[in-house]
Amino acid sequence: TQLLEQSPQFLSIQEGENLTVYCNSSSVFSSLQWYRQEPGEGPVLLVTVVTGGEVKKLKRLTFQFGDARKDSSLHITAAQPGDTGLYLCARGGTSGSRLTFGEGTQLTVNP
Amino acid sequence: ETGVTQTPRHLVMGMTNKKSLKCEQHLGHNAMYWYKQSAKKPLELMFVYSLEERVENNSVPSRFSPECPNSSHLFLHLHTLQPEDSALYLCASSQGRGGNYGYTFGSGTRLTVV
Image (cartoon, rainbow over all chains, first blue to last red; front, side, top):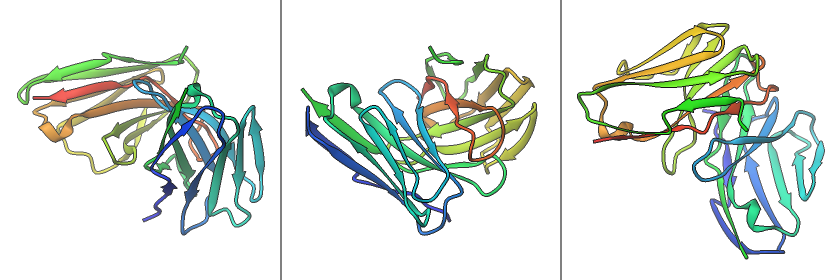
């Protein structure tokens, strides 16, 4: 079973703090996607990474794909209450359409 | 504004009822999916349709029956559900099949089986 482990499961911080969440697997990813899900809504795609060592930035969010393509991290600088949500990573399958999701990190940013 | 619309947003049904969930996408995507999201569990893939053809059925009980009449519409027909089927049901679409294509999700249907 190709499991995705996300850590931490829960994170509660104050506005302005920095944070990093992680996504790990024992097997190599063909690609990795990060999503954010707000309460009462479906997940929204933030980024897709496909190359080992790749770094992508989206405003205050920095996404990194591990060199060995078995792990990824999401770093948020100066978190804001609007960043609150469930952050999901999903790995692409080697064939077909399957995306396998992790359980997610529930982030709460307090004003 | 999402390009994937799901109705209804909330549904309460008895175990003997029959109901249907509807999903519609206006993105021109070729693949559509049903996922189940339960508390403290990862998103579970239920069904995959590519160009209106079901290409994957992930060992889902027969009380869940999908239908894809065209590439823009996807239904999930429900009958004789169990309380453990209560969950958020999410529809998604993608331009193609494969892990490099991002998924666009709808807002989901919150289903409660009583």
